[in-house]
Figure 1 (tube, rainbow, N blue to C red):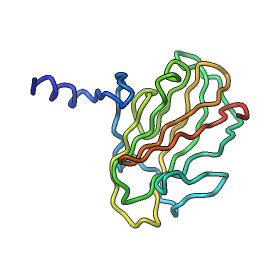
Figure 2 (figure 1 turned 45 degrees about the vertical axis):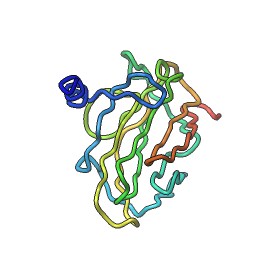
Figure 3 (figure 1 turned 30 degrees about the vertical axis):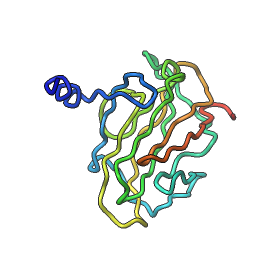
Figure 4 (figure 1 turned 180 degrees about the vertical axis):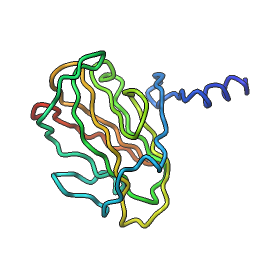
Length: 161
């Protein structure tokens, strides 16, 4: 049993609270592209759980890129320095329609874990990335989790919600 758990942890597989299996990739601190002031509020960014600064509710421009996830909307994410490890998850009912990616590598995912990064609480860690969609637009919900606290935030990707 211990070997099975060790293999599951080493491979990056985890079981979210909803019981579904999702690959959870940890985004390390060195993948931050900038260190803006926190909370980051430029360009319509919104604070969530006093830990995240998330993109605006409406994200207009979507690009057709082809492939399994044919539509892409680039947008950054900012996380407060000194916060504990946090997660961002696409709800199970949306996993066939939307995926996320932030940080420097990997494939579109349904869940990302961000490592805890040292720093002053007035400083953020900005990550490049964004949304992948199967359709040209969507009203995409994401669940932001910090410890036992969670908040669901909707994003109008390519359309208003």
